[in-house]
Image (tube, rainbow, N blue to C red):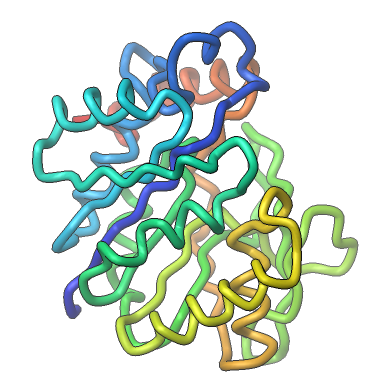
Amino acid sequence: MKELTVIILAAGMGTRLGDLTKDQPKALTLVAGKPIIEYSLAFARALNPAKIVVVGGYLFDQLAAAVIAIDKKVVMVENREYRTTQRMVSLMKAQPEITGGFLSYDGDYIYHADIAKKIRGHLDDQIKIFGTDDESDDVQLDMVVKVDQHNHLVAMAKGLTDYEYYFNSILYCPEKIVPAFFASATEVLAQGNPQQTHVEEAILAYAARRGAVAMVDLGYPQWVEIDTPDERAIAERMITRNNNGFAAI
């Protein structure tokens, strides 16, 4: 595998967590005694990257201090427009820091360590998204993916009724495709409202106009997205049940 930059997108305000994010970034919300960002960074390390980048926004200084206390080598990038933009803009803020290819994911997900092992075997010369065709016994999966006969992306959105997979926010882009992907992202942002433009729109734009995006099935969904207090409680149960499979640093 060539050089890889892992990008964690953690700029959002986390308003659905209520008082838990009133005075701190969402990524510092404690889950089983550790902040979400600590799980995110442990997962990033398991991917053996050349560089880890965290994009913050809401209460950026708090997040930056916490991240640097965990790992001084992490590069912090600020999305000052976090109130009026979505994850696509946060990802674009990280572009100047990319060394080699990149793998990005949302900072409100906690992934099992086994997922990193599986992903490392798929980091080749093709742009890819990751997820599962299984239902979860623990969480509701809502971002769904339609593929063609070659398992290449055709459509992706919440609310699709014809689909084969669920997307878990992980995007891999090899070095040779990085310029083309961000060209697609720039075009999508120019056409729409930055507050409603997500990473998924850029992936779809690339797939429609520039090249195939492969879907990788990671098997049973060993991850949880934490948007609400109920999902935080679910994550704590999953972590407790899995004997450190979701271990933080």
